[in-house]
Image (cartoon, rainbow, N blue to C red; front, top):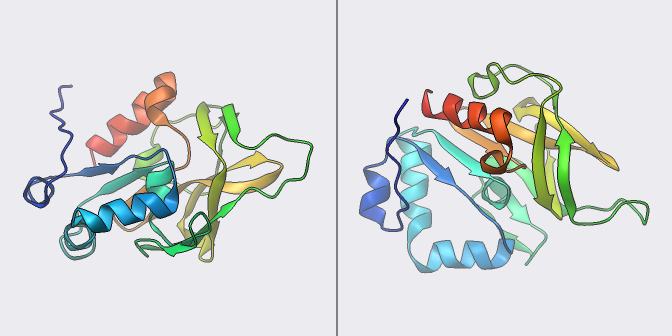
Length: 180
């Protein structure tokens, strides 16, 4: 399968997109500030909420979909009834959570079609979503606590892990997103 993808940053390029991936590594507050500064929040809201364009948030990209983020204590995009909060797991485990870990499916979704229950994905994060609406949770992962590792709310998809670094399981998940 051949897929054309582009890294874009202009409102016009985003308006033309059939699907959107919102990646992210970094600071919640600074990321939201940058999205606002370059004028992308409005066009993202238009595409995702009005046009119902499928979007996949990866790591910080998923966290930005929450109502609020602890890191920077700022409002997020508000698409998910959730907050992005720092791990509070004591001294037994290191933060950030880095490396391979399993996910446990909570419900089915076209995003997860064919992804085995014992598949491992690569994680690199200090924050995670705390969902107020657990019906959006597709999968959870254990790291001192159970946290949502994949979510879906209508056309809005998010994963806490990095599918692009997660070998076959990650490639399958990205393929599923492309084929939505």
